[in-house]
Image (cartoon, rainbow, N blue to C red; front, side):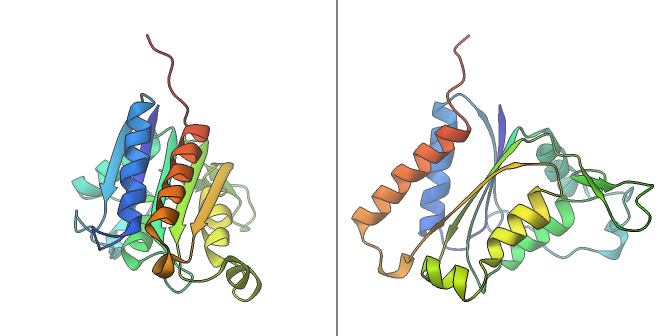
Length: 201
């Protein structure tokens, strides 16, 4: 299977990078092909130009590559910190430019203006790993867990990816090395649960 892994964190020493490394290693061990992008390392331009908005716009070659990969992927894994209840701006820009009409979704012509979506992504499963310095109950009860709404309802459901799982690791700033090792074990198990080892030929 082809799995798209997208990382958005500027610090290479971050726990997000450790999650990404564990994710990629697990996918490789399970025999999957990995499309990996560290958006900060690649200096991804998050600004959506006006000329890219139309469905049939001519896209820059680097954006075409991202679009081709996400449309070919059998699964998607997103890794990023919780910043103000949102993904980092660079990742939001990736969504704006890559999760685009004609690639990830379309609106049905006879929807009477209601904007009824038809998901186009081939992927059937998606995982989002987040890090946070907010307690889980506070995130849910006070803030309404906006990242769950963004990724599950607004993005993956709309694009036809219905098997969705999100895990928030917290509180990062006071976590011990032992705690992080346990979290990485959970990452390995989750990735293997969704994308198990491929049968040997």
